[in-house]
Each structure stands twice: as C-alpha cells, then as structure tokens.
Image (cartoon, rainbow, N blue to C red; front, side, top):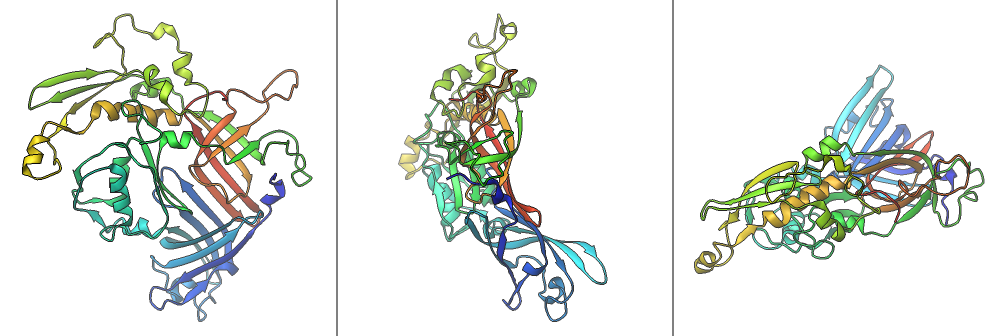
Length: 441
C-alpha cells in the first residue's frame, strides 16, 4: 500500500510524562510541547529523544516543572507518539540533559535530551571479569547478565564464528562491545579471512549486534521513488511497485581517493611478528580477492573496477604487491588460553586473535560501507529503523525524457541514521543512507 504524502501532516504525541525521582508522581508536558525529534543510528549505543517545551509556571503547584518536580536528571519518562499511518513508538527513556533556553518572568523554554537506561548505567558498570569463548556470547552476557547491564529489552545478536578470550580491565560496557565489534566475524554472512566487522546499536525494538554483510544482505523494507510529480491525490501518483514518495533527495559519496588510500580501504599491508619464535610474515591482501564473497548492496566497488591504470606501480614491495597503508602486530599467542594448567600449556602456541584473518578484512569492510551516501526526507514513517534496507529510485538525467531510472546511484541503501521530527508544521522522517558499492543490481 502506497504511503500518501499527507502522512507528513502534524501527527499526535499522545503521552509525554516525566516521573519525579523524589515522589514518583508524573507530570505531563504535552500542553507545552513545541517540538520533538527521535533519532537512531547504527553508530550510536542509545536511541535519543530531543524535546522542547514551554513552561508558563503553573505545571506543578504554580511552579515550573524544573522547580516543582524537581527536574534534576535521570527522571523516568514515558512517551508514546503515532504517525499518520498508525505506526506507534512507545518508549521509556531517562532525562540526560536539561537546557533552559529562554528564561523570562512569564514563561521559560526548556530543551530536554532523553536516553535509554542502559546508556546511563554504562557510565557506572565496568567489565572486570574474564571472558572465554565466542564473541557473540560475550555480547549477550554483557547486555543481559545481572553482573552488567541486565537489560530487559529484546536483544538480537548475530552469531560469530570466532572465539576471543580477554579480561575486561575495568572498561565500560559499551566501549567493550564496540571494541569487540571490530574483531568479529559472522558465522552466517561472512567468511573468516575474507570479511569481518560488526555494528552495535539500539532502536526502539531493542539492541542489535549485526555484521556489515548481514546488513547488506537484507531485502528492502520499503521501496521509494523521487520525482517531480506532485502527490496531491493521497498516494495515487506514486508509481506501482513503490511504497512511498521521497520529498527531498540529496546524493553524495564519500570517495575521496587520498583518504581512502590512507586508511587502506583497497590495499592494506600488515606485518606480523612472534616475539617468542621470531616468526615474521607480511600479509598484503587485495580487495579484488575478497570482493567476490562480500555481500554488496550495489553492483560494483567503483574505484576498484574503474581505477586509473596510471597509478598502478610497476615495481611493488613485499610479495610484489602495492599497498597504501601498513600496520604492525605482535601475534596474540599464549594469552589466557582456556582449560586447566596442562591444557593451557598445550594451547600456548595457539593464536587467541587471528590478525591475519580478521584485522585487515575488518578495516577494509568498514571503509567500504560509506562509499555511496544519500540523504532523504519523507513523510513521517515510524516503521523505519536504523539498520533497515530500503530501495530508492529517481529519474536519470537525460536530454530526452524517457522516464528511466538512474542505474548507478539508485538501488539498495542501508539507513545509517534516522530522525523522526514532530512539530506544528508536520511530521517528517529524515534518513542518512549509505552503501558499499555503486550500480543497481
């Protein structure tokens, strides 16, 4: 069913209650609410809500909310808001920041930042134990165990194929999870030695720990089109096969050749050294070798497929292959192996973390993700979340109008950042989109 543009009309915020830390009594700020924005990102550990309200001084016993509640931070907040297609977000968040922006004798304007409970607990809970086994099991333990964040929210963790033993060293929970993300290889969507890298993020549906290739391998949740045809008739002008019309569309990409080469996005050399045996090895995988097994959203990796041969080196160093970045690693052998004393001695020569199989591959995969970018604005749609795949199309620029779609920049994109905004002017959703390749499949 096509989503009409009128879905961008002002929608309803049904509940916005702030509960006092002192008495537990709630106060509603719905009557003074000016604007509300809700955001998710695959780069953020918490969902966030930013709200602005006007306080006339009669909210609680002829006092402002800040004075009467009192509003000091960490207050539990219940929100419920629905778009014009009956998609509802119902959230329990906590006050993280209070910013009075206007203070006058007759009114004040206050901005609030709300975050998840786990986001605040993260500053107090440290990882101070040893972990053995699969990385995906470590993530579940940190999120759900009574010893750590003990979240009651749904947790969607993609299983990893590799093990990693470590000691928390009193690091924060989210820091540890994101640190482990770079060391993870998916059991289902990635091949050890060919691809690696995960994202950890939160949406209104819970916490997610997903590999980059799993995100790229999704079917599109919605299909959208951008054109110059106005949608005055409640969705009737949306072409068949599409779910929603894009109101504003901006193309972009993140391919700055020098920066990509500095980061080793295409050729990244690693030098491995074992201090116990003096073993020395140089690994120099090329993106051409791993591209066939990557789950790409587009058709091809642009710079790799269409590179200028003038910049190919005639004489390359180390294994006769060129490279643009070098990293040095000491092999991680004999580090807290599992088992009793005898078993640990037997495993002392085994690698705890396989740099040659994971480090380079993870570096390349993260660098590729933001190759192609776009920003879209649509009528408010709360069914979309960070990490979702969508398909977008727009007409090709031609001297003769053939109404064909652009085959290079159109296609599948991942929602990396999403913001739903509600104010008196309307309800709109803005998405930042990214993908690792160009061309429509």
